[in-house]
Length: 476
Image (tube, rainbow, N blue to C red; front, side, top):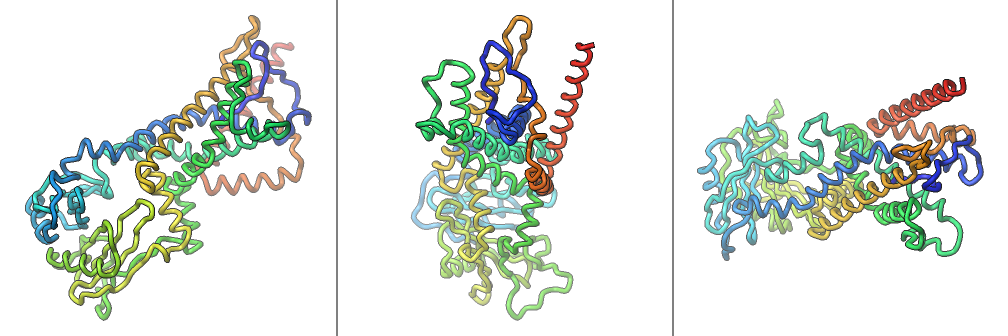
């Protein structure tokens, strides 16, 4: 939300030294920060909103583009054994190491995933009809995502520019919460007295004449309705950003709030000295995987209470157990995990979602909601509404900037002037003593925010010096 100072459209706003009259020192300072942040960050927010809007329809696009691989033509009664389905997938994809199997159910195909050395973080997924064991096709996937979803995800995260492109999304997320909170405070201050305050807060003044006042009403009230959702997107987006994400991970480590790992060590079996059996990779598999063990592992996991869609991960080597993970990310989520010894027919370890640390639970749920998965189509609709609403708020913000332009023949300008400088000089000393350390701490936790804040300050100082030089030149 980019708030501005209301002035008559036909005359430029006054530019005296800041006073503590209608606008206090705090309000003037916040207004200037909100104005410049909105003007400079809004283009990046537009890109994030448009790419996020495109991502919200990825499940439907998957069905259209990859429906042949993802779904079966006819839903059968009984599924073929997983061993038979894996054998069919192996016949279609002789190379690579079996990484995981997600059994199909309903009209969904079984996904047999293979690690391939030259694919980096990508994998090959073979899609098998669970009722006929016919191979439906093979796709290059990224953490289970199809090429369409992967392309849209990369577009939203980094504009297909790799590590450099990730700065755009982190920049937008780092400033979004600042703009939203600043806009809320400014709008609340403007409507803090008089009758019908709540109505004015949450709805535009339709009786206002056309101009900056009406535009501001739409801009601010819409932003207020969107505030919770935008703050949520900012917070969850920062959790997996490049630099702020590191700070978030360090906080989880300090609080011991990471998602618990499930131990794959087999009881009574000594792990190899070189650690080749460490859970998380299959390049060290010492023996060929017996596909028949997959059916036994699934049956044991079902008996242990893991219902719904699951992902089965083979043992890394003979010293390790298999793992079965629930992968139902819709609410109520099912994310329990067990380690299974198929030879002994036992569950050797488990990690239930209900026992995870609260922050780990919230982080997992937040990511799924940010991706539009947690509440199914309703989640997609809410995200789309947030993206469209944010675009409207930005357009109204720029429109206010244009509406406030000087229109007198001798003082015409393309846009309005910024709120006056120097409000920080009127901030009480205690405010600076408390505020500066807080800003420094936030800048340390959100490095992209800190660096760009310094850049904004440098730009503002340079602009102020240039205007003073112009004023001296005109006076001389």
